Length: 301
Image (tube, rainbow, N blue to C red; front, top):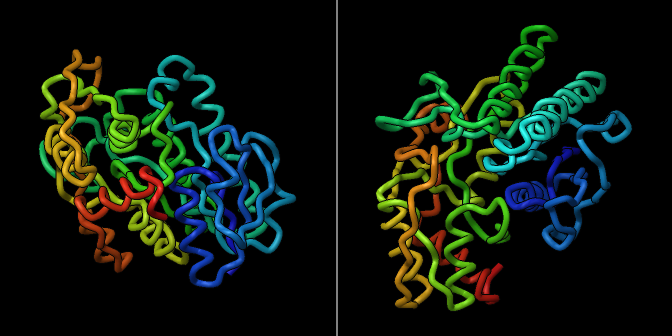
């Protein structure tokens, strides 16, 4: 199969590229390298520098599927610069859909669970109320609705995947990083990480390799929206204790004031993905954290 991966030089995108190459697919990566890195790409992937806000037709000829992971993913940036966030996440997605429409390419779209559902009172299924708290969640939800509209209008089979809190090797510990990368980045430098608030806020942490497999499994489906997580919630305090254990350090975390608007509970119901994609997460949290720490320590993949 010939596949396009937008944002393929980024954290999650590079894991999708790796999985595609491992099964023998031809992979074209489109990335403007604003946050992605050439060194994230495995041998065998072809990179073309491209901004999804610009016309993309010249890249789509012959492509059967486009895994659309290029995005503005920093919640803080979305609050400070909502027009930029929408330009990348909404207008950029429309550019991808238009190029895909003209070339008969299926789109598999990377969306978000926590930022769309808002506060959860248990594992959230796909039909849960959608209550984004920041422009980032709104723009991702808008992208999903554009995919659904194209499916209705043109009879396409585009798929949206709502990721949980993805972690793993190659996640940048700076800027828009997730908490696992931030913790390990600080621990690798011998510095104390900060825990905001009481640390009891929970998230659904899912390993990047598992996310890549779910993403590939969505290709060929006839549309739909699927949560991609574990169905297990872990508090920040529990997460940090696991990080300390796998890193073999005794550094105590520093307490910091709670952050305005931060979700207290976020966890995904993944039964729909299990039944329809034939997928379930395989890497447990401690094992995934160990693999991630090895990459930070320079001895892993």
